[in-house]
Amino acid sequence: MSSSELQSLYQEIILDHSRQPIGFGGLTGDAAGRSHQLNPTCGDEVTLELDVDDAGLVGLRWEGHGCAISQASASLLSELVERGLTIEELSERIDVFRTAMRSRGAIEPDEELLGDAAALGGVSRYIARVKCAMLAWVAAEEAVARARA
Amino acid sequence: MARRSSVEVIPRAGSVITIEAPASPIAAGPFTAEESARIRADFPILGREVNGHPLTYLDSGATSQRPRQVMDTERAFATEHNSAVHRGAHSLAALATESFEDARARVARFIGADDDEIVWTSNATEAINLVAYAISNASIAGGDAAVRLAPGDEIVVTEQEHHANLIPWQELAARTGARLRFIPVDDEGALVLEELDAIVGERTRILAFTHVSNVLGSVSPVDTLVARAREVGALTLLDACQSVPHMAVDVRALGVDFAVFSGHKMLGPSGIGALYGRRELLNALPPFLTGGSMITTVTMERAEYLPAPQRFEAGTQRVSQAIALAAAVDYLDALGMARVEAHEAALGRRLAEGLSAIEGVRVLGPVAGRERVGLASFDVVGIHAHDVGQFLDDRGIAARVGHHCAQPLHRRLGITASTRASAYIYTTEEEVDRLIEAVADSREFFGVRP
Image (cartoon, rainbow over all chains, first blue to last red; front, top):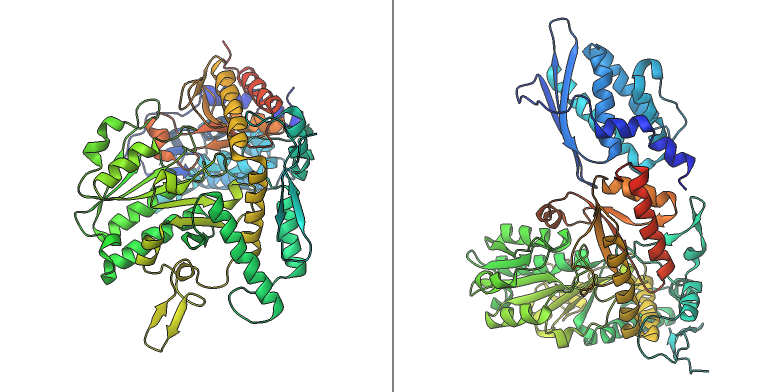
């Protein structure tokens, strides 16, 4: 039997996103911001591109491979961005997500701000997996910085 | 009642710890259930729980657990005669030096070497770097021709290597202008020996290869590789990290010039490893690290160095770790390395057969039934190794996930990561079966079961 902790780490919504990720593919190579992130301990990789449209809203696409957590996290980030976020709003949410991830289970992710990505809250209790969940968000942060530069 | 063989640890030092081998009338073959129980009782950590389950420790290939005899030996040194070695004339200094050198002699004997052919290092990685840097020092400073590299010379490794036996050679090649080549592997990860003579040739100066692959569990054809290296006059370095802890290794019978291994993979503490080198070669190599304890005469302009092994042991040494490693070697000796090897071969077979029987699981390396040590890496198709490892951990099963410091090999096998289960003397069939059952269940949990 699997423990309830494991079930809360791998919620159905996370497994669904890892199998059918949102925002995957279609990299153009000429985005306003781009970032490649690699987790050297397991080889997980994400390449993420980010553009800002005339209305100031962020568009995001990514490619990569890795564990269910890293893939689902990139997908959930894409889903969040699809709601329509400005670059400032995205930056703010990356900070909120990181704070929750680093809290060792003490801070529940804010569903208002993070949407379904809040389901990744269980990851913060597994220190070794926080990097997996953060991979796409770190890529987005760097892409934001480059888009602004 | 069979006679128990026993070994005294730190014979000259106050408290004597006796290591007893399990009494057994069986001269060969895996450990019996009774022997296994007695061995496990020596490892306090095996009694703990992880995530509400008894610990199933299947990560000995990364680091092994320590028996109380090893921990007691280290503690006895610290509490009774801790002191600096090779300096000072007081009683404790003399006792510590004697224990330290006695430890070297026991480790040397364990692999069929002479005392002065064993250099203490922090681990195998440092041992390989020591050789690589000593060779580049000789190359820069016009050292002995036997250990000098020049542009046009070639260093050969294999595609199976751990990063520790690859990157130091990449860097040595970059520093000296030598060219780094490798013996490729086939789709199963086995060395393509048909290409050996074409790759190892007249220009080859160093052939560095692993004895047992830390990913595949396969045993390298040392005889064939050493014979070819000798034919062309190349030096050989054997990465024995995954062999010395698990089988009888005689470096002279193998005919290698250098061999390296780590203490923490063979019941010893971390922070201690060893370099074996043929005496004349070690003495032909210039130092890697310089400083105290490795010199004869020092002036303000220059220094002269002691012969090996001291010339490679600059600064204060890892004394308690070396003594504890010798206790680990005594423990293994008392069990008998033939028994250790037989025990682990049986577990390796069980692992490979059990995992291969699960649909959607690809076992890397030799097919089930072929020779392998007690180690199996595998890919559960459709589930990333990190997720498999997380599922196993939830049941108290400790296995390694990732590329196991062998990215090129994984890339060649078409994967980025795998899960690895590795056994040791204290591993039981029940533990292997627990792993196999959990791997099968992980497919259901992650929904990849048809």
